[in-house]
Length: 249
Image (tube, rainbow, N blue to C red):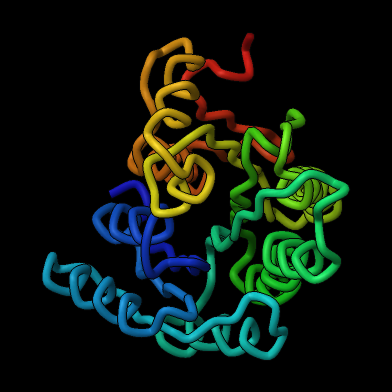
Protein backbone atom coordinates (compact mmCIF):
# COMPACT_ATOMS: atom_id res chain seq x y z
CA UNK A 1 0.00 0.00 0.00
CA UNK A 2 2.66 2.48 -1.09
CA UNK A 3 0.10 5.22 -1.84
CA UNK A 4 -2.24 4.62 1.08
CA UNK A 5 -4.06 7.82 2.03
CA UNK A 6 -3.05 9.67 -1.13
CA UNK A 7 -5.27 11.15 -3.84
CA UNK A 8 -4.00 11.05 -7.42
CA UNK A 9 -5.13 12.69 -10.65
CA UNK A 10 -3.99 11.04 -13.89
CA UNK A 11 -4.53 12.53 -17.35
CA UNK A 12 -4.95 10.23 -20.33
CA UNK A 13 -6.23 7.60 -17.94
CA UNK A 14 -8.71 5.87 -20.23
CA UNK A 15 -6.26 3.51 -21.91
CA UNK A 16 -2.61 2.64 -22.39
CA UNK A 17 -0.09 3.74 -19.79
CA UNK A 18 -2.59 6.05 -18.07
CA UNK A 19 -5.01 3.20 -17.41
CA UNK A 20 -2.19 0.97 -16.19
CA UNK A 21 -1.05 3.72 -13.81
CA UNK A 22 -4.58 4.30 -12.52
CA UNK A 23 -5.12 0.60 -11.77
CA UNK A 24 -1.72 0.21 -10.11
CA UNK A 25 -2.18 3.34 -8.01
CA UNK A 26 -5.58 2.13 -6.82
CA UNK A 27 -4.17 -1.28 -5.93
CA UNK A 28 -1.51 0.51 -3.86
CA UNK A 29 -4.12 2.38 -1.82
CA UNK A 30 -4.59 5.65 -3.71
CA UNK A 31 -7.92 7.23 -4.45
CA UNK A 32 -7.74 7.98 -8.18
CA UNK A 33 -9.29 10.58 -10.45
CA UNK A 34 -8.66 9.67 -14.08
CA UNK A 35 -9.27 12.18 -16.83
CA UNK A 36 -9.54 11.69 -20.57
CA UNK A 37 -11.67 12.56 -23.61
CA UNK A 38 -12.50 8.89 -24.20
CA UNK A 39 -15.51 8.83 -21.89
CA UNK A 40 -16.67 5.26 -22.46
CA UNK A 41 -13.19 3.81 -22.00
CA UNK A 42 -12.55 5.99 -18.97
CA UNK A 43 -15.76 4.90 -17.29
CA UNK A 44 -14.78 1.30 -17.96
CA UNK A 45 -11.44 1.80 -16.18
CA UNK A 46 -13.31 3.38 -13.26
CA UNK A 47 -15.59 0.32 -13.11
CA UNK A 48 -12.67 -2.11 -13.28
CA UNK A 49 -10.94 -0.38 -10.39
CA UNK A 50 -14.15 -0.53 -8.34
CA UNK A 51 -14.52 -4.24 -9.10
CA UNK A 52 -11.06 -4.80 -7.61
CA UNK A 53 -12.03 -2.93 -4.45
CA UNK A 54 -10.35 0.35 -5.30
CA UNK A 55 -11.71 3.90 -5.35
CA UNK A 56 -11.73 5.89 -8.59
CA UNK A 57 -13.78 8.45 -10.45
CA UNK A 58 -13.62 9.33 -14.12
CA UNK A 59 -13.86 12.95 -15.35
CA UNK A 60 -13.95 14.31 -18.88
CA UNK A 61 -10.66 16.13 -19.42
CA UNK A 62 -9.36 17.96 -22.48
CA UNK A 63 -5.81 18.74 -21.33
CA UNK A 64 -5.68 21.84 -23.54
CA UNK A 65 -8.60 23.37 -21.60
CA UNK A 66 -7.76 25.29 -18.42
CA UNK A 67 -11.36 25.03 -17.21
CA UNK A 68 -11.35 21.25 -17.68
CA UNK A 69 -8.23 21.03 -15.55
CA UNK A 70 -9.77 23.18 -12.85
CA UNK A 71 -12.84 20.94 -12.87
CA UNK A 72 -10.69 17.81 -12.60
CA UNK A 73 -8.75 19.16 -9.63
CA UNK A 74 -12.00 20.29 -8.01
CA UNK A 75 -13.42 16.79 -8.51
CA UNK A 76 -10.46 15.31 -6.65
CA UNK A 77 -10.75 17.75 -3.75
CA UNK A 78 -14.55 17.56 -3.50
CA UNK A 79 -14.73 13.78 -3.80
CA UNK A 80 -11.66 12.77 -1.81
CA UNK A 81 -10.72 15.87 0.21
CA UNK A 82 -7.35 16.78 -1.29
CA UNK A 83 -4.83 16.23 -4.10
CA UNK A 84 -1.42 14.67 -3.45
CA UNK A 85 -0.30 13.35 -6.83
CA UNK A 86 -0.60 14.55 -10.41
CA UNK A 87 0.49 12.39 -13.34
CA UNK A 88 0.63 14.36 -16.59
CA UNK A 89 0.34 11.32 -18.82
CA UNK A 90 -1.80 12.41 -21.80
CA UNK A 91 0.02 12.79 -25.11
CA UNK A 92 -0.13 12.25 -28.85
CA UNK A 93 2.40 11.36 -31.54
CA UNK A 94 3.01 12.82 -34.97
CA UNK A 95 5.54 11.67 -37.57
CA UNK A 96 7.00 14.21 -39.99
CA UNK A 97 10.32 15.67 -41.07
CA UNK A 98 10.74 19.40 -40.43
CA UNK A 99 10.12 20.32 -44.05
CA UNK A 100 6.95 18.20 -44.05
CA UNK A 101 5.53 19.33 -40.71
CA UNK A 102 2.35 21.36 -41.01
CA UNK A 103 1.73 24.28 -38.70
CA UNK A 104 -1.58 22.73 -37.64
CA UNK A 105 0.01 19.42 -36.63
CA UNK A 106 2.86 21.21 -34.84
CA UNK A 107 0.40 23.30 -32.81
CA UNK A 108 -1.78 20.30 -31.94
CA UNK A 109 1.14 18.22 -30.64
CA UNK A 110 2.62 21.12 -28.69
CA UNK A 111 -0.80 22.01 -27.24
CA UNK A 112 -1.53 18.51 -25.95
CA UNK A 113 1.96 17.36 -25.02
CA UNK A 114 3.38 20.67 -23.83
CA UNK A 115 0.64 23.10 -22.85
CA UNK A 116 -1.38 20.27 -21.35
CA UNK A 117 1.40 19.59 -18.83
CA UNK A 118 1.67 23.30 -18.03
CA UNK A 119 -2.08 23.66 -17.46
CA UNK A 120 -2.26 20.52 -15.35
CA UNK A 121 0.62 21.65 -13.18
CA UNK A 122 -0.82 25.15 -12.82
CA UNK A 123 -4.19 23.75 -11.72
CA UNK A 124 -2.68 21.27 -9.26
CA UNK A 125 -0.26 23.59 -7.41
CA UNK A 126 -2.89 25.40 -5.27
CA UNK A 127 -4.47 22.11 -4.17
CA UNK A 128 -1.07 20.61 -3.35
CA UNK A 129 -0.21 23.69 -1.31
CA UNK A 130 -3.42 23.11 0.66
CA UNK A 131 -2.42 19.48 1.15
CA UNK A 132 1.02 20.48 2.46
CA UNK A 133 2.95 19.16 -0.54
CA UNK A 134 2.70 16.67 -3.35
CA UNK A 135 4.30 14.86 -6.24
CA UNK A 136 3.97 15.72 -9.92
CA UNK A 137 5.12 13.11 -12.42
CA UNK A 138 5.40 14.22 -16.03
CA UNK A 139 5.52 11.57 -18.74
CA UNK A 140 8.13 12.71 -21.24
CA UNK A 141 9.95 10.20 -23.49
CA UNK A 142 13.39 9.19 -24.64
CA UNK A 143 12.37 11.52 -27.49
CA UNK A 144 12.80 14.31 -24.95
CA UNK A 145 16.45 13.31 -24.47
CA UNK A 146 17.69 12.50 -27.97
CA UNK A 147 16.77 13.46 -31.52
CA UNK A 148 15.08 11.26 -34.09
CA UNK A 149 14.67 11.11 -37.83
CA UNK A 150 11.03 12.03 -38.27
CA UNK A 151 9.34 13.03 -35.03
CA UNK A 152 9.81 16.77 -35.20
CA UNK A 153 6.95 18.09 -33.07
CA UNK A 154 6.92 15.07 -30.74
CA UNK A 155 10.60 15.46 -29.87
CA UNK A 156 10.18 19.18 -29.33
CA UNK A 157 7.15 18.70 -27.09
CA UNK A 158 8.78 16.01 -24.96
CA UNK A 159 11.93 18.12 -24.62
CA UNK A 160 9.70 20.93 -23.38
CA UNK A 161 8.17 18.60 -20.80
CA UNK A 162 11.65 17.66 -19.56
CA UNK A 163 12.67 21.25 -18.84
CA UNK A 164 9.25 22.34 -17.59
CA UNK A 165 9.68 19.56 -15.04
CA UNK A 166 12.96 21.01 -13.82
CA UNK A 167 11.55 24.54 -13.60
CA UNK A 168 8.57 23.24 -11.62
CA UNK A 169 10.88 21.32 -9.29
CA UNK A 170 13.00 24.38 -8.55
CA UNK A 171 10.09 26.76 -8.08
CA UNK A 172 8.13 24.64 -5.61
CA UNK A 173 10.75 22.52 -3.80
CA UNK A 174 10.58 24.58 -0.62
CA UNK A 175 6.80 24.02 -0.48
CA UNK A 176 7.17 20.26 -0.43
CA UNK A 177 6.00 19.83 -4.03
CA UNK A 178 8.23 17.51 -6.02
CA UNK A 179 8.27 17.21 -9.82
CA UNK A 180 10.05 14.53 -11.83
CA UNK A 181 9.92 13.31 -15.43
CA UNK A 182 9.70 9.77 -16.79
CA UNK A 183 11.28 8.94 -20.14
CA UNK A 184 9.96 5.68 -21.59
CA UNK A 185 11.47 4.03 -24.63
CA UNK A 186 9.27 2.00 -26.99
CA UNK A 187 6.37 0.69 -24.93
CA UNK A 188 3.68 -1.69 -26.15
CA UNK A 189 0.70 0.69 -26.21
CA UNK A 190 -1.78 1.78 -28.91
CA UNK A 191 0.55 4.70 -29.69
CA UNK A 192 3.28 2.26 -30.71
CA UNK A 193 1.25 1.32 -33.78
CA UNK A 194 1.61 4.92 -34.98
CA UNK A 195 5.32 5.09 -34.22
CA UNK A 196 6.11 1.73 -35.83
CA UNK A 197 3.34 1.06 -38.36
CA UNK A 198 4.62 -2.35 -39.48
CA UNK A 199 6.25 -5.42 -37.97
CA UNK A 200 9.55 -4.83 -39.76
CA UNK A 201 9.96 -1.35 -38.25
CA UNK A 202 9.01 -2.65 -34.81
CA UNK A 203 11.48 -5.55 -35.06
CA UNK A 204 14.28 -3.17 -36.07
CA UNK A 205 13.70 -1.00 -33.01
CA UNK A 206 13.42 -4.02 -30.73
CA UNK A 207 16.73 -5.36 -32.03
CA UNK A 208 18.35 -1.99 -31.29
CA UNK A 209 17.42 -2.19 -27.59
CA UNK A 210 20.20 -3.75 -25.47
CA UNK A 211 17.69 -5.74 -23.39
CA UNK A 212 16.23 -7.15 -26.61
CA UNK A 213 12.57 -6.41 -25.93
CA UNK A 214 9.99 -3.66 -26.04
CA UNK A 215 8.77 -2.30 -22.74
CA UNK A 216 5.34 -3.06 -21.32
CA UNK A 217 2.98 -0.66 -19.58
CA UNK A 218 3.72 -2.03 -16.12
CA UNK A 219 7.42 -1.26 -16.61
CA UNK A 220 6.49 2.41 -16.80
CA UNK A 221 3.64 2.37 -14.26
CA UNK A 222 5.93 0.96 -11.56
CA UNK A 223 8.43 3.76 -12.17
CA UNK A 224 5.65 6.35 -11.96
CA UNK A 225 4.43 4.72 -8.74
CA UNK A 226 7.88 5.07 -7.20
CA UNK A 227 8.11 8.77 -8.03
CA UNK A 228 4.58 9.38 -6.76
CA UNK A 229 5.30 7.65 -3.45
CA UNK A 230 7.17 8.87 -0.39
CA UNK A 231 9.97 6.48 -1.32
CA UNK A 232 11.14 9.19 -3.74
CA UNK A 233 10.88 11.98 -1.15
CA UNK A 234 14.40 13.29 -1.90
CA UNK A 235 13.94 13.27 -5.68
CA UNK A 236 12.85 16.33 -7.61
CA UNK A 237 13.83 17.62 -11.02
CA UNK A 238 15.07 14.13 -11.88
CA UNK A 239 14.74 12.07 -15.05
CA UNK A 240 13.74 8.43 -14.74
CA UNK A 241 14.66 6.67 -17.99
CA UNK A 242 12.82 3.40 -18.66
CA UNK A 243 14.08 2.26 -22.05
CA UNK A 244 15.85 -1.11 -21.81
CA UNK A 245 19.20 0.62 -22.18
CA UNK A 246 18.47 2.32 -25.53
CA UNK A 247 19.78 5.79 -24.61
CA UNK A 248 22.82 4.29 -22.86
CA UNK A 249 24.42 3.51 -26.23
